[in-house]
Image 1 (spheres, rainbow, N blue to C red):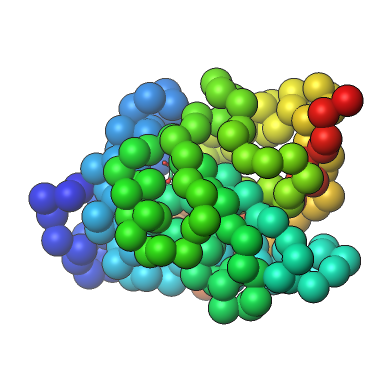
Image 2 (cartoon, rainbow, N blue to C red; image 1 turned 135 degrees about the vertical axis):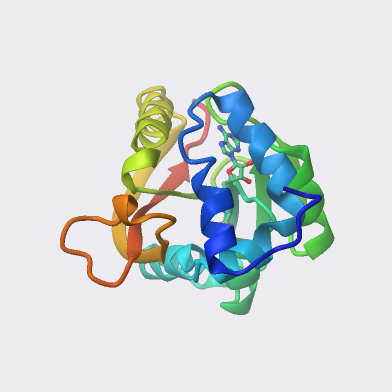
Length: 205
Ligand SMILES: C[S@@+](CC[C@H](N)C(=O)[O-])C[C@H]1O[C@@H](n2cnc3c(N)ncnc32)[C@H](O)[C@@H]1O
């Protein structure tokens, strides 16, 4: 991906669509690593709305002012969620991602106070206790296996008392589908849906 220039919508759809059936986590993270330099321009072509939707959700769920909240952006990618958070007054931002190349992009955006390499499900999160954890994923058909694996990991963290779920909200208009087969029945505009998870990190006993 890095050697290719970001292209028009159909080129981007073909490139990203080809990755959708990767379910092996190592291969998925390698794909994200290759994609990192072109990620922002490619998702812009797909009218990617997840960061804004996630921060809408976070703002609604948060009891206090944004500047008091420590947000851990899990699977932060290049930092698009951080840009949206900062624009809404969130100032304490930590990020983790399983791809070193994505973390390089996130570092370059200069919005996180702390960034760490961390593979969710394989390693504990390195953030301080007591923060809000935000993560998102697509709910189109080819991502369902990944989503189920992610949810199993989240459930284990909750059962172990590490995190408490605040919100799991499905939203429409996540991004343009990469193929008509990915569009949910009844959706007329070619967009797929996604899901936003918010957790409160719990203090250790
Ligand atoms: C679709 S991107 C989303 C990035 C960012 N949240 C955004 O909205 O632009 C998914 C990100 O999740 C990371 N990722 C996928 N599986 C992961 C895992 N198990 N642990 C940590 N990061 C993971 C990838 O490296 C990639 O940066």
